[in-house]
Structure formats: C-alpha cells, structure tokens
Image (tube, rainbow, N blue to C red; front, top):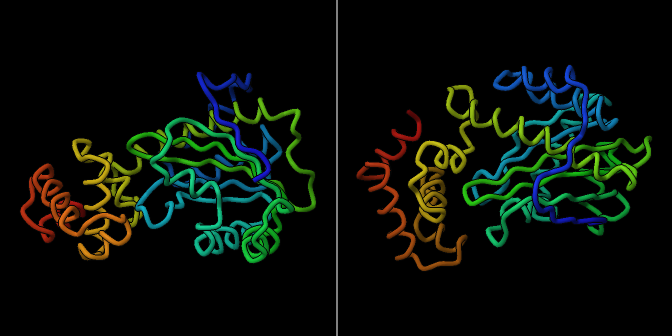
Length: 260
C-alpha cells in the first residue's frame, strides 16, 4: 500500500459543476448507475476504471459493479481476478474489519504490490497502473469506491489527493443511496445477504446478522464457528437470537423470509 490516510470530520468540498453531479444523482436506482459513476469519475478525476464493493458476507466483499472507459474487457478481467485475490488486498481487509469505524483514503500502484500473482492478475492483465479508494466502515456495513488509471496513463498526482478525496466522497454518497434503494427492490443480486439483513432487520446485532447470513448460505454451525473463531454453542445461541428478532422458528422460515 503506497498510502493509507484516515480521515476525520467532514470530507472536503469538490466544487464540481452542478450538471456533472446532477447526472450522477439521476442514475441512482437505475441499472446504468455504475456506468454513470464511470462517466463521473472520468470527468472529475480522469479515471479509466471504477469499482464499487460492499461489505456483504464475511467471506468476501460484494462487488456492486465495475466499469471502464478503457474497454469493457479490462473491467471484466479486474472483477473476475479480484475474487481470487481479495485476501491479498488491503482494501478488502479494511472493508471487512470490525476493528475500526470511519473513512480511509488509500492509494496503491502496481509497483507497490508485493504479491506477484495479485499484481499480475488484478493489475497487469487488466492494464491497471494505479488506484485510489475511499473506504467507509460503519457498524452495520462497509463500502469502498475505487478509481483506477490505466497502465498507459500517469498515476494520480499526490498534489491532487484532497480534491480526489472530495470526488470519491460524492461518489460514495451517491452509491450509498443507490445500494439502499436497490436492495429494497427486487433486482438486487442474491449473494449480498448480510447487507440485505442489515437493511431489512436493523435490530439484529453484528454477530447475529453475520451468523444468520452464513446460515442462509448453507454453512453449518461448526463451519460458522471455525470461520468466526468462536464456540459452536455460541453460534447456535446467536442463530436462535436472530430467529427470534426476525420472528422465524427455523432455517427454512429464515430462508423464506430472506427471499421475500
């Protein structure tokens, strides 16, 4: 990681053109939202690719979407390969961690990545040279917005980091609204279980939501205990408490409630 800056207080103002911001806001809740993020990122930060991740299930962050003005194939390669290397990525660690809360701005270049396979698969094969990200971690969720420069272009200039943080802040605010809106509809992917539970059942504790999400995915109490590094009896207790808060009696009812 080339840079990791924890932010405090309100994010800086980007002083962006009203029309640019309005176009992004108009895409909230629409299928083309991620493409609108890419257009916004290109116009305000000369970015070549964008990606959005949510803290879904503990296993791996959920990819909300990715797009590229340097060719659709680059975005597809980056998205496909990232799923294999999430454990190598510092952003992923920050996104899923429960040890902190707030906003972090990160910068990474291909040259700063020590893992050869991660650098090859997620940067070199996708033609990516550098990345800037804004990661937001809250009690109930996490989200990461990243902008990338292609290998053939210069990395994001350090002198412009404050403005880039502001740009990412606008994108993050729009994406939070988009995700909240979309999750309440019927078009959302089925693998964002923990995020959906957080929205639909806010009374669940962090651990109850985590256990319920893994149960819905088909994991046994023993498997969940191993992943979370807690006792199996504790898992069973959290699961029962989740059932009670969601007003269901068993996993079958929980599955039916989740799919409703």
